[in-house]
Structure formats: C-alpha cells, structure tokens
Amino acid sequence: MMREKATTLYLGPQHPGITGNMMIKLKVEGDTVVNAETNVGYLHRGFEKLMERRNWLQSFTIVCRICVPEPDPNELNYSRAVEEIEGREVPERAEWIRTLVMELSRLASYLLWFGGQNGSAGLYTMPQWTVGDRDYILDLFEELTGGRVYHMYIWPGGVRRDLPEGFAGRVLETMDYLEKRLIQYDQLMFQNTIFQKRAQGVGYIDPA
Amino acid sequence: MTDIKFEKEQQVVDQLVNTFQNLSGKVKRERRIEVSVSKKLIPSVLSYVKDQLGFTHMSHMSCVDWLEDEHFELIYILWSPELKVQLLIKTLINRENPSIENVDMIWGQLNTYQREIREMFGIQFTGMIGKEEFILEDWDEMPPMRRDFDTAEFIKEAYFERPGRDGAKNVRDEIADRSGEEIPELAKKYSRD
Image (cartoon, rainbow over all chains, first blue to last red; front, side, top):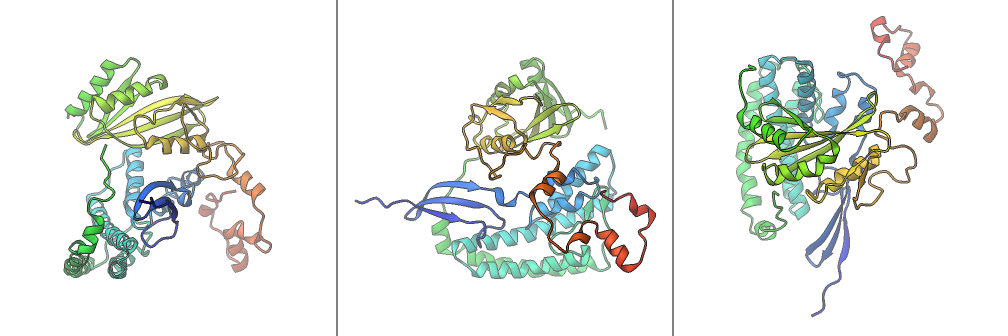
C-alpha cells in the first residue's frame, strides 16, 4: 500500500481558529498531523524594553495589551506585583470590584475562544454566535471603563473609579441572557456527533 | 500575621537547605517559596526538585539584568500540583562572558525559553541544540533586552523620519504652539527630553 507523502501546511498568523498571532508549521499526512513547529515571533512587542523608559504608573497602560481576548489578568498581576513591592493595602471595595471585572473578562475570553476553536474545526456558526454575545459583555465594560477591549481600569492601589449607578442590575440582565444561550451552545458543540468524532482522543497532552 | 507558620512550605525549604550546600531559601508567603543557589548546582537542584519533591511543572524561566551590580539573574519558576506550592529558583551569572549549563533534558519546554534568553540577553547555554535565530532576523547588534542597549540610538540609525512629520516628535509642544496655550508647570517634568 502506498504511503501518502507528507505535506507542509502553514497554520498562519491570521487564522479564524487562532485568537492571537502565532504560526504553526504543520507536517500533515492525509488527516494526521505528524510534526508541528511553532514560530511565535509575531506578537513580541518589546514591552519590557518600553517599560524601562516609563514610570511605574505609566506602565500600567502597556500591560493590558499583552493579551487581546483577556486583558484584565495582566493588569491585575502588574498591580499586585507593584503593591507587594510597595507594601500597599487595597481597600476592600476595590477588591470586590476587581473580582467582578475579572469574572466578566473571563466570560468574554471563553466565548471568544469557543468560537475560535469551532472556527478552526469548520463550524462557523459558533463564532458568529459567540462574538455577538461577547458584545454584550463589552458593552458593560464600555460603560464601566470607557474602553471595550483594553480597559486600563485596575491600577496599583485599587481601581480607577467606582461603579456607575445601576450597574449591578445591568450585569445581572446580561448574565440571565447568557445563561439561556449556554444550552444552545452545548447542543451545537458538545452534543454534536461530528465534533465528538473529530475531537475525542485527539492531541492528548500529558501533564508531565 | 508573622506568627503563622506555613508548614509544608517550610518543609520544602528545610529539605533543600539540608541537601545542598550554599543554598539559602525562605518562605515568602502562603504557597510561595524562594531559593537562591549558585549556578553550578542548577542541574542537580532542578532534577532533585522534579524527582524527589514533586515539583513536576516548569511554568516559566526568565532573566533580569542587574546592570549596576554587573550580573544577570536567572529565575526558574516551578509548581507542584500536589502540594500546590510555587517555587522560585534564582541564580546569578556574571555579566562578562555569561554562560550556564543547559538543562532542557529535564523539561523540554526550557529549550524555547533558553533560546529566547540566548538571543535577547546573550547568555550562552553550553550543550544546547537549537537554531541561532529565534525571533530577530539578520541581527548583528548587541542583544537587545540588555539594559545598556540604547533604543533611541538604534531608532535614529535604523529608521528615517517621514518628511512632514517633524512636529510629531514632541506632540505636546506642537499642540501648545498651534493652540496658543501654555503647558502647565506640573506637566513639564514628565517630558521625555
């Protein structure tokens, strides 16, 4: 039986399945990936070098730009590191607001990732839905911080300003809406036989 | 607050201090341990913590340039999934002819981190196999992440100003000229010049 020749495919820096710029050079034999080499230079923007010429406070605007789908954890890590060096305490209300912002950001990032995974598998309905639903969370962020994707809201010492009036009610409305949508996502993706056949047992990575 | 003893963290520190000489360690806070060791002991310490102490996950490896003290500091960040403790192993390398032994046979992902540090800081990892070029293409200046690399000089030599963009160098002055307003005193000290 003739063995198929290996072809080289470039899962290039722009691809609907990849939320971020990374290139993977794949060697494919038929339907199986035999070898994969990464080329990660496209997203290196030299932030550490930029921060050398800025104050502690000016740098917090750079930090959120490390990750596009989920910028808030970077802001939080930077702020906590500076607070630990200074020995500064954060007020309790600021801690709770930070938790709220982080959870919203996590939801937005998962929705985007969800869509991206399905996009690279070929089910393009999912990205249309999730990117649309993610917009509702971005609306909340716009009301709170002024920016949809890059918030620059968490800085060393707390958060920049308090919640607007009625914000909690609007968050709960959005969450109720998203909860209903989760059932539809589940049906389309996880209970989809084609996806299960393609994805189960493929590409298992050992934790070691 | 200082009376709380973090038992399992302290246990790890004690085991390391008793096994290796010239190793100092302390518990920074809950779930975070810091250990300093000389660079010759790094391969043995890393194998020991992976096999005997359960720190099986290598999260990150990074490098800090202490220009004034004339050394580099390499930091290995490890995580133990059972104890749920993060361990930082720090070591110092001389700034003149910096080199350290290669450890990517212990964890495969260290190859990528070591190649990045070799390209950006110029530290040689003896015995490492990997292409010279990692991110930079056709680069023949000094390693760029070092603190004595002058970015302003590099920009002047490598790029040219687009004609008609002279006012873009100092935007605040340009806007002040055009609108006829003065820059307030408290803002003047934040200029970059």
